[in-house]
Length: 371
Image 1: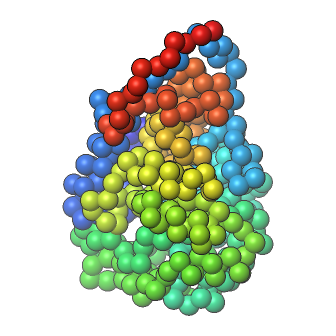
Image 2: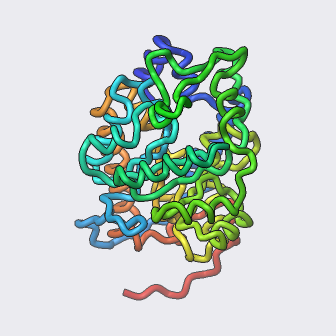
Image 3: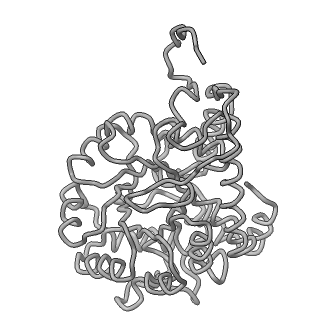
């Protein structure tokens, strides 16, 4: 999924690149988590158990997410400030996701507003929400998203403070002067002031509510009819509380390994969260997916679908809308092939028995199989 085109883009604009693809602290931990996902997804710690001699001439990848039918369980995660990657930014991503028949999640900190993204045409779209200290701002934003036709809120809960991102500090990151956080433009919150370290960190410290708690998940349900997905859960304990708080779903995410070092890779946290929910609400995985085989592993571990972030921004930077369409098609094709070679004709046929993991107990002997 990586490409030399992104490296060329990096050389042109290293500040934008380091923000979009950077990690917490010195990035060493992100590399460890990426390797962990690779090993557990591809390597010796995880392996497939394909079934054979099954008619796989027809493969059905369609699924229903919160009542909305989509073409595949591969969706677009919220990534901020996409016009830093390409002039068309979120417009291009929205059109590509719609063409692929899947869901796009728009970031609160997008460089295109909810209304502008809605104007690109039909599509199923979710809205990612940060909760600001000024709750009137939050209410206005949620209601605007609902009026614009967005179907769900993805509430980010792992950012009471911004993780230390040393590349942003080194580059004194701030938004380029020609761009704004469009959703906040009319509220005098669309610009970031320059700072001695990271303009984004200063913005978050000044605006984001550190008192956010589970009661606010319930409060959000009083101001919108949209279902609330809690994004940033990585433990079974919090998964159980999310169910009790009325969440419509959980997104297992470590914020792209850009918040807290030494948290698990998303693939490592997934099964614990799935087991804790006991099937009462759907669980999704966001982070670390680079191949169709990653998608298969996530579904085998109990995810109802996955979200991709960096691959979308990489492809957007390289080729705009065409690039995003291409990466979604690549993942679709790889996932379909993995299903076929594993003997799965539909998503419901992907089960825990199709993979082994390092934490599995030894398998008992199987009873004699029969035709």
